[in-house]
Length: 221
Image (cartoon, rainbow, N blue to C red; front, side):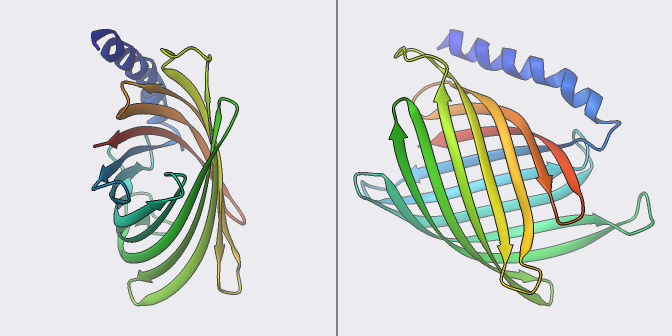
């Protein structure tokens, strides 16, 4: 266990120089916690916190809190989940360098996830439908997420893995395309219940894009 903790510390140490450089650029940072509480063989509670920054840290772009109740079936390969999210966005006023506007959003969502294994590669599909209450506006959006997880070796004690995903967002309104996210990173399994992951994400919209450095903590308890 001490060895695994040391490896996690090493990962964070390697990340810090990148974060310090990003403070003077448009390269943002997301700190993400994703938890899953298993109630029994079928039911689970999902909980999630995302602290998104315009730079390395300290310039809040968005705070996202998400929770939900899920039902697992098909030998734990599939999960249906009904959830709720609260999102606080801090948007810079157009033409101003230091003036921000707060935007509150309440979100209800339904999602279906499906997992499969091809050799040593794990694939995960997620289909999510969102009903978004953004201040006085109501919007709906569909999201499709495809992720893969590849261990570095086939050894049983191998803790490192490569991770990648692509997620597309589609609106139900006239402007259908909302955004797309492409991510690649490296993760480390501390144990069977906790893993850490860090990587690069490019998020592009219809007319522009933005780069992010993401740090994840996954906990199953």
